[in-house]
Length: 71
Image (cartoon, helix red, strand yellow):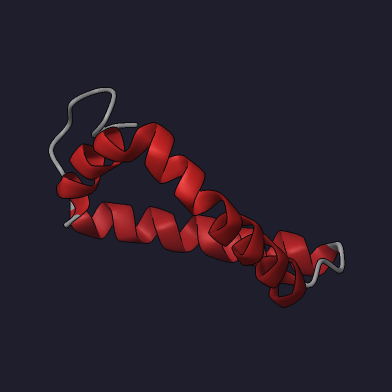
């Protein structure tokens, strides 16, 4: 939000730290409730693969422009 909404400068180390905090909190939450990430991830990846062509057709140009930011 700092970068995208409030226009603050990009700080890779800060983003990396925040991502690791979110990642480990997420894993801890899943472990606490017995959620098997490996199993649900496989199902979700299959769902996403089935949707890709639809997304490309509907949002192809927008996705290309947004992707340039990350490439």
